[in-house]
Image 1: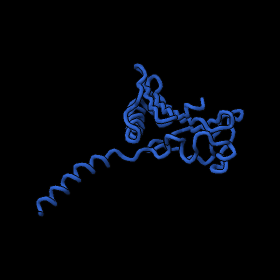
Image 2: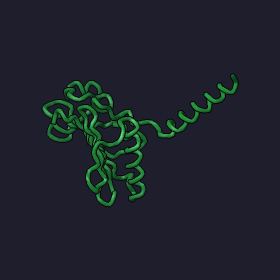
Image 3: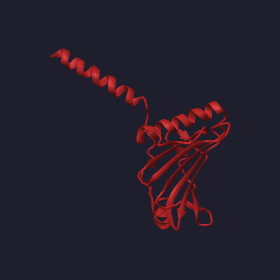
Image 4: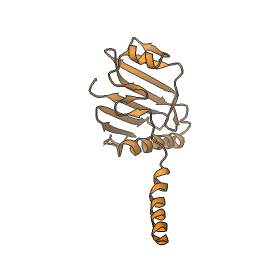
Length: 163
């Protein structure tokens, strides 16, 4: 009986430890929106959740003063919330200052890729030779891309039913 218990504990340890090594997937990225906002939410409802949401570009693009500039374990420079016809439709995040060189930028790309894959599986589309991956999750398209020479990263999360 002791042998069976030890064998069970050993098997559980072999399964659980490797899974915990992947880290947490970014809770910010959801199939139905981003952070506490859901696709299709009006700007009025969004500002009730985030009173610091401010217009950046002609009532279309918004940003937050008190933004948590982190997605998963990766620091980001800018996060823009986009509204199409007064409805929440996309998020654009850019990573520039963290990309001091191609190696560091590549590591951040891999961290984001791994955490998105942990939550949604392998990328649905890998676009050409460029460093660009896409995941299609319900009505959401997630695109992670790196610039030429890997000097910056972009993460786009959008509701494909509203575009």
